[in-house]
Amino acid sequence: MKMWMDWAAKAGDGIVDLGTPLGATKVMDGSSVADTAATVGGYSIIQAEDLDAAVALMDGHPHFMSGAGATIEIHETLDIPGM
Image (tube, rainbow, N blue to C red; front, side, top):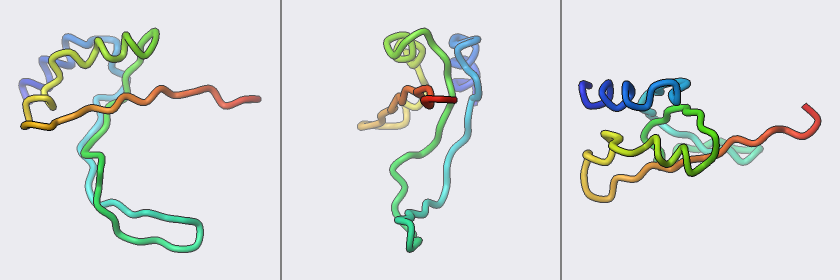
């Protein structure tokens, strides 16, 4: 946990919600529900001026130390038109 807390301290105000690991996953198609293999292991919510700044916040993230092939996906949220 120390690595996570050190990264969080470095990211500072860029962190909105440090997040949590994720568990079991279901997939729905509108008429059925089924178990499925999880492709996302956890989440954090960050804020940044743009996508490049969000990428910079991930520098030194401890997830990269979890083994070969460890990746982080960054998804930009968009405003909902009319809201």
